[in-house]
Image (cartoon, rainbow, N blue to C red; front, top):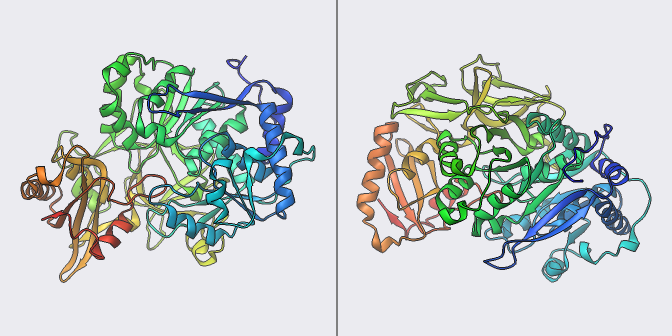
Length: 566
């Protein structure tokens, strides 16, 4: 029954209306499955909600929330990854409240951020689960455990909805987290755009995801899009993936036409960590699309993952480089499934001057980027960050977005909203890129640019060079940034060493010399400082990206003085 394509739904304004539609028309179809891994050797324990059962649970929790808060009030979701998270999120929307997707206390390195977000959002009520009830009660007066609300609480009243569905707090990679106001029409529009871009509007797919549901991509791809299209979404915990990446691949193998998303590091991690014995049980020929939403997407990552799992039937056209951000709900543009990866070799010196000129792919000084396709249902343009003049194809500038998916602004931050969302309808993303041959290329973050002697250098480009110089350097766990110096900006790299290595075992001066030489040869940059630190030392955002801003702040405060340096 679940393999049949669901009928097309009428166009609704809100996710709860779609949920009610599927509960009435396909009540016994599977809606959401959570695969728990309670022990290190667990193969997964499945829990499933049908559309009818999900609708009942959502109506029960929504009725309970309506007793606690007035329409338009904020509801913070401090649930762990799982079915209660999905239920709580949809219940908040159904009750006419504004959801604030977060996480339970205790997420490593994120408690300060959690406190800051709760202070900013000022929720009237907090949703959690029984397991986290005692911890969460310390954070708010009104707390509801989703799994303690009985089915009998369910009401038959129609879903209520204001303008704002939820506040999507930015991950904090470049600034203090701010909550983007995502309207009901924004999230439905973006879900439809993503479904169209990835071909899931006409093909029945199964969404398989481990991305956290408090993250924009996890929420839209694993909750909103399945609800709009009436398709099965299979979830697992991010920690379960990190402990054993083969678990994600097993779920991809087990579900027909699986569609999933992950950042660069996850594909590299799978390619290096999944054993031959684990590969032997995988059948990946049914995978429909694998999204990569990192900025920028590295063609070498896609190649490495494809080479690692081609023997398991993984088709070459499954890797889909994509681009998005919370301010646009999430999805902006993507390469289409089934098409060869579009790769571009660009002249490094020209790129530093703001021009995307071709270079030989085998040139060691070339910058290799993957095309992130074209938008669906929205428009993009490249503009000069200072003058706002629209730039021509091949010129590098700020990526700007316009469409029904663009959020309403930042909660309680009017000046920032005016600056970013603008009065002309174009969202200023703060990301740099260009358009070539109809493909969006993302080159980096405007605020992360390192400018030395009037030349632009992209930190992720420098980081890629550094991590390739020595096997003891941990991939995607390093930060390059500029600091003020007497004669201009100085460039610093803080990098973690691998878990199976200690500083005492390493010839740190030799490693630092190799790093300096590689960066000098490829980028023409002199590194002022190279600091080697223990695994887990380089701070990351709640979405798992390295926070260059916080690394820079800690470096200037002397936090890395005890590390290996040179």
